[in-house]
Length: 59
Image (tube, rainbow, N blue to C red; front, side, top):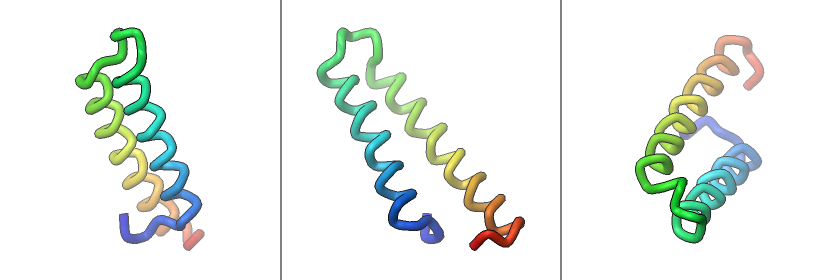
């Protein structure tokens, strides 16, 4: 998390906000369990992308 750029952080927060909004205001099909699963997956993806960028030397 310490290695992400501000733009990446904003995009990540927007995704979290959108999913949270759907959880709270949606039709009930997307519940807190879905939200938590998606959030966990997003963090895992972010870590993998950061690791890959370090290996490739993009940072």
